[in-house]
Length: 201
Image 1 (tube, rainbow, N blue to C red):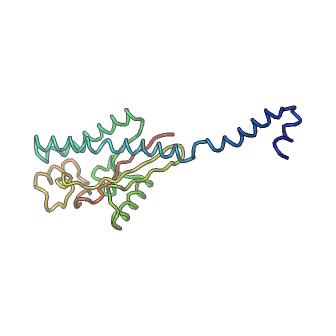
Image 2: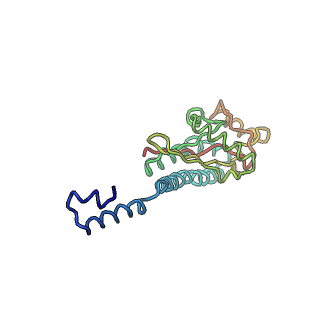
Image 3: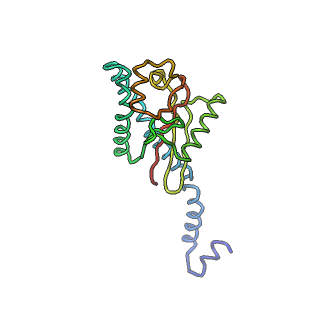
């Protein structure tokens, strides 16, 4: 049965039937693509995730200039979580840093989804992909999750490089603040961990 026949019992005029037919043809064409909202939330997650690292780097540089590398260790331990908390309150996204080689067991242990992403990033980096470009965003249940790789920078090697190249002062400070530290032995450019953000949809 065509549209005209379906509307005939209701006494619809030819003009009304034509309008209904045109509307039904147009609606599917103007409906937004299914991926539009996915692109928008990916961009939002990426923006939130890239907010913390630059702030942390500036704070570390300032403290190193002022008091030396040993004094900068509490910046990562204490100031970084406070920065993350501020970003979370401002944006509504939960944000944290996690790693397969955690320095702080209380904060940096990845869950199963984050672990899978970290392992995938390591494989892809080993195959030649740039760690700077590695990211993953995904809807899981009623929330959106996103991770972005954190490559080791030259500044990070003071406390995350090979232990044999660290100063005695750095080693002593790390032992004091992180008795179960596993986050050493890196070289510049390796993936140190990820910035992980999540938000209820």
